[in-house]
Image 1 (cartoon, rainbow, N blue to C red):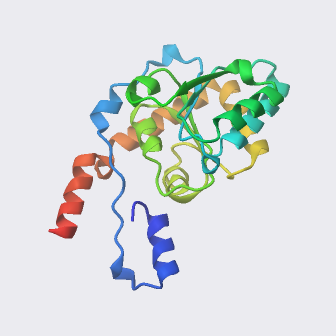
Image 2: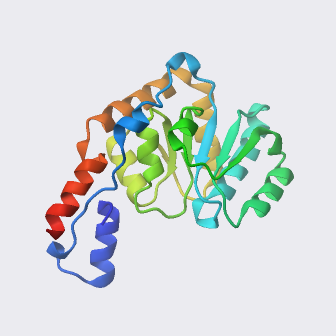
Length: 220
């Protein structure tokens, strides 16, 4: 299982003995993504969401939150929409209807994720369901402030360690408030993303090499 949340679900759903499922976290090339770290002087902030444009990824909730945020703060920051999928036309129409289209930059599918992460400051992960988002790990390695829904391994990681901001999945009101806090509390936001990055860099279990070793020991 890729997180303790997925392990608990698997044990319960299939009614398995506790020793039949082990947790091995997703891993990334930590050094590659750490190279995308920006200096604090470059804080804008620019928001970004990196995900397939599918309903489960929660873009609709983010867009609705941005619509509410615009009414509160007037001018939205730039928001990069990175990814492709079947919901793109629907989401573009929603952005037009909510009056947020001018703040969105549609980047499509991109292979060079470290370069994309170097261009944003806040990574938003509004998914309705996740095991453990690899993008979240990449964001922590790249020293991004993480705002994510409290589902699966994302809640497990961020909530337990207090290294990011969590909000209820599908709750655009709460997400709008968390986004507004981020915009209005620069120093606290800096501190939170610094804490997240430092915590993550001290967790070797998320390095792809460690992940590979654990799978080898499991199946060898």
